[in-house]
Image (cartoon, one colour):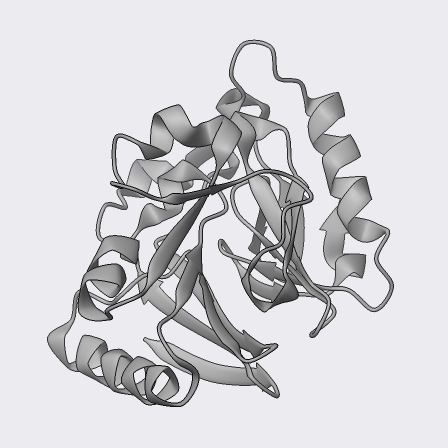
Length: 212
């Protein structure tokens, strides 16, 4: 596990995903090491797609860091980009009284299989930390624009690695989804000035590295 404060009150950490298999990396897929993010904005502690490491020592270090921030800023709000990325959200909610998991309402049927009583939201709703949800087309995924940090958290639509960022493979799309719509969603993200891409598969990335 690695934790970095990549900007004032904006943290990035990495951890091996416990369910990863080598075949997940084939044909443009995703790698074992995944990224999570945390920020403090408007007095709120917000976590994005958090993964607690399986290694006990690494987990203890991360819990210690989270405990410290919760003591200062209150229980965290956990925002999920896509239902695959619930990750360790339940463990975190169970640890901190008052913590909440936020799920995009159109994806509720998938979240309901994993999370009891999530806070549902729709596009345009007010979210913790002044965060704004943006539609990403694939499986009702949303990205999160962080105006306080001029950054966007992305789930599965954009993947990073080898110093570049790329769109998810066409093989991931479901019936009724198209790569044209995926590209349009990516271009909407790129409209923000001074935008840093915070990839949950690949880490912080400059927009110029995104191949669309």
